[in-house]
Structure formats: C-alpha cells, structure tokens
Amino acid sequence: MSATKVVAAKDSSRRVTETVAGAPARARPRWQRALLGVAGAGLALWSLWPVAWTVLISFKPDEYIFRTPPSVRFPATLSHYQRVLNTVQFGHYLQTSLVVAGLTATLALVLGVPAAYSIARFRTGGEGFAMWILSARLLPPIAFIIPFYVWFARLGLLDTRTALVLSYLIPALPLSVWVLRGFIADLPAEIEEAALLDGCNRWQVLRRIVVPLTGPALAATFFLTFVAAWNEFLFALVLSFLRAKTWTVGALTFVGHERVLWGELAAAGTLGMAPTIGLLFFAQRYLVRGLSLGLWR
Amino acid sequence: MTIPASDRYVAWLMVAGAAAALAGVTLYPFMMALRMSFLDIRLINYLRNPPFAELANYRALINDPFALRSALVTLGFVAATVSVQLVLGSAAALMLNHRQMPARGLVLALALLPMVISPAVAGYMNRILLDYLHGPVPWALRSLGLPAPLGEPLPAFITAVLVDTWQWAPFIMLLVFAGLRSLPAELVEAAQLDGASFWRLLWFIILPVLRPVLGIAVLLRATDAIRTFDTLYILTGGGPGSSTATVSIYLYQLFASGRFGEASAGAVLLLVVLGAALRPALRHVVS
Image 1 (cartoon, rainbow over the protein chains, first blue to last red):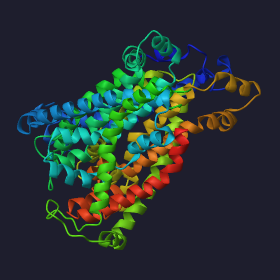
Image 2: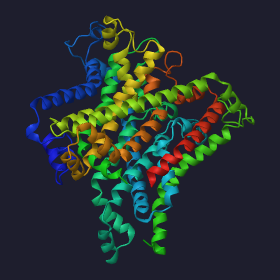
Image 3: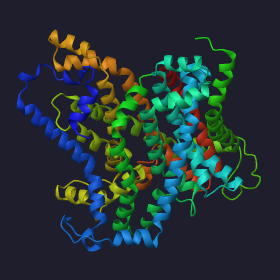
Image 4: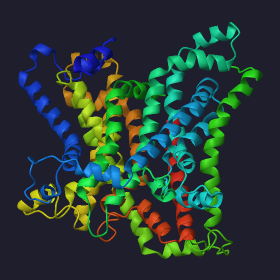
C-alpha cells in the first residue's frame, strides 16, 4: 500500500488534499516535508510501540523480562508460546473466537444487506425505525449482561457459542445496516429500475445487482463486525467458562492474584492480535472508502 | 417515490430478519431487566422464584455512594477522552491530509493499528508496560522522579484516559481524514485565492463543512466511552480506590457480587438516561 497509490486513487477528481496546505508547491520550503516526516514517524512509533514491546516480551526468557533496565538484546525463546498453546489449550480458545466472529460477521451481512436495502430504497419504518436500529449500537453492553446471564442460564445456553453470537449481534447488526444503508443509497437506482422493468423481482435485484456493486462496503462491514466480535471481552467473560471461552478471556489465565506470567500473557496477546493486524493491512484501502461514503448519509 | 403495494410487502420482509433479531436481543432483555429490577433477585435465587421487592433495588442504588461516584467518574472519563481524542485525532488527520505528507499510506495503516487491537489486549499490553515492578514505563518515570502511572488515583485516571486515547484517537483520525478527502477543492481554492491563512481556512471553511462528521465522531466516542469496560477492568480493575470505576465497572461489580436486582435497576436507569440523552443526537444523525 504505497503512498502514491493511495493518493492516485483519490485524485481522480481533484480534491482538497493537494491544496489544504496553502500556497502553491514551489513556494513550500523543504523543511516542511521533513517536519511532516518526523511527525509521521512519531505517530507511527506511538501507535506501534505497545504492540512491539508485547511481541518482544513474548520471545524474552523469564530472566530477561524481570531485568531492569529492560534489555533489547536477549536470546529468543519459544517457551512462552509452547506453554500457551500446549498447557492451556489456547488454540481451542482461538478457534472458538474464529467460529463466533465468523458467524457474527456473516449473520450481520445476511440480515443487514436486505434491511439496509429496504431502508435505503423504501425508507421502511421511517425515521423512528432507523433511529431504533442505530441506537442499539450505542447501548452499553453491561446493561444487557444481567438479563442475558439469567436468560441464557434458564435456556441452558450458558457457555455456548450460540449465546456469544446472539450477544454480538447487538453491536454488529446496527453497524452493518448503518454502513450499508449509506453505501446503497449512493448507488444509482436506474440500474435496478432497468432490471425491474426486465422482469426481475426485488430479491433478484438484491442478489445480482446490489450485492456485486457494494463489494467494498460488504468487505468493510465484514471486517468491522468480525474484528469487533474477535476482540470482544465482557460478554465472553460473563457468558462462557470452558467450552465457549474465547481467546480474550483465555489470556486472563496468565493473570493471577499474586503474580502475572508476563511472557505467556504477551504470547497470548500476540497470537490474538496477529489475525486482526493482518486483516487490517489487507482491508485498509476499503475502510476509508467504505466509511467516507457510508457516513455522509 | 410512491411504493407499489407489492413492493411494500417485500420491503417489510427484507427488514424482518434484522428487526426480529435485534428486537430479540435488545427489547426482550430490556424488559427482563425491568422486571428483575423490581425483584429481590440474587445469585442464590435467580433460577427459582425471587420475591418481589418493589423499589428496594432503586433505593439501594440511590443510597450507594459508589453509584454516584461511578457516574461522576464516567462523566469525567467521557469529557476527558472525547476532548483529547477529538483534538489529537483531528490534528493527525490534518497532518495526514497535508499535500507534502511523506509515506501517507504507510503512516495511515500504522496509525490505525491500535483500533484493531482488542481493548482487552490493550489492557494486557499496558499492564505489561506499566507494571510497577517490571514495566519499562515506571522504570523510566522513576528515574525522572515521577510517580508510577497506576499507583495512585489521579495518575491512574490519567493513564486510563491516555490508554483509551492511544486506542481510539485513530478512529477520530480516520473519520476526519475521510471527511477531509471529500471536501470540494473549489471551496478551498477560492478561499486561498482570497489570501486566507491556514488557520482562517481551518476555522471558517473546513470546520463548518466537517461539522456533521465531527458530530458523528463525538457521538460515537462519547457513547463508547460510557461503554468502556475491557481496558479499565484489565488495567486497573476500577482503579486505586474507585478512581477509574466507571458505571460499567460498577454495574459489573454489582453483578459479580451476586446483587442481580440492584444491577438490573442500575441497567434500567442507565438505559433510560442514555436513551433520553441520545434522542436529539440520534434524530440529528438520521435525518
């Protein structure tokens, strides 16, 4: 993802990006670019350093972790990872998270696309309905913890993946509808109308026209809902204990009352972070596009 | 556009799935919480028939000093995080948007990194960094004669705000950056031809046009700040004393100590207050 590519993609119609700075280019002193470079590097370092430090710790042998001043050079070890994966079944927790997050993101799209289309094209339910859907995203999860706990206990759904997926729909569905509605509203209706005249019904229009055209928005939505579910902690903490434990809660295993297994904790955190970081670099170009269009409506 | 009857049926069918799912996981639990808030329901009796308690739970909440404290802590936390993140995120977006910004794509991607980290992991990571005995940050601070970040109430609160900023200022940056990219060039050029300086440009042109985006950003971050739980729980568990115990942490503590009735009452109060406060904001966003 080079800088020139990003700029070129955005410059198809001349935008303000090139002129916000003020006077024309030739009057700009070169130190401005250097200053921006330093600031940019500072921003990147600020974002990176907790992550980098954690990854570093995950490979540090215990004796070096406890040493002050902290050392950057040390013999790397995989012992923390071995302990995390072998003795604690962390792999099982990661797998649970994968299934739950994947199901949540998929459901958010399956339910959200038709709903977003309906609201965008027909204004179904009016303002009140749209407001209600959006408001669900803003509610504090803690308020639902107690009823969910009692409800799922009575249904025998405690410690199940089903319970988690149902819980994660609360933020995922509104987000999905919100982003997709804006994107769909921007699509020219003529293509759909032409298809309708040719005899398609609305469902076929959805499947054959709208879905292919909203690719970037679908990707962005899937990414956002997946990441949110993958990273979720509170509901997993309360609703799962053994079979449906996700990796975020699983990492707590290494935080004891008396002592903390820093190396193992760092390894667990690194394993959990890796997929979302990878996905970020992959989906990054869709995020800006998907959000800038979806949020203006 | 007039909608034919056949389309109206399809329109409702299309929202039916999402609406039913959402109602199932929000409205029904809310009604459950409402009912439970009037019961003397606890960990020991929640699967049997708990006795009716009228307003006892609400009264207990109002009399609990920690309840009010958590509300104040929450307000302070929201105010601090939203203002800091708004300023820093917008500044970062302006910087990224600058014509002469080198390696824009790379810096953007790296700057967005904290957003995809689980808030729980942000809590874990910062515990590693800030641990009194083993962390690099306290070690560095100690050699400068400064207090440890998590040891006392005020530094802990500031640290919590900083950690939240680290994680979510990029969100503001992303929204503002997307908004800046959509600004019409003619507007800015006209102003520059008239000789506007950078600050005048910012204040009179960019900010007004970006107001809807900033509004959404503030709304989202404010509500997210109220919802914050993971990072605070893992980082401080409510802080030294209860200096970082927001409403979320407080309600969780009620739940964890088995006081389901009071926790339900708190949940109902929280939802009602939030709902009332959000109505005007939401109406603004939807239209």
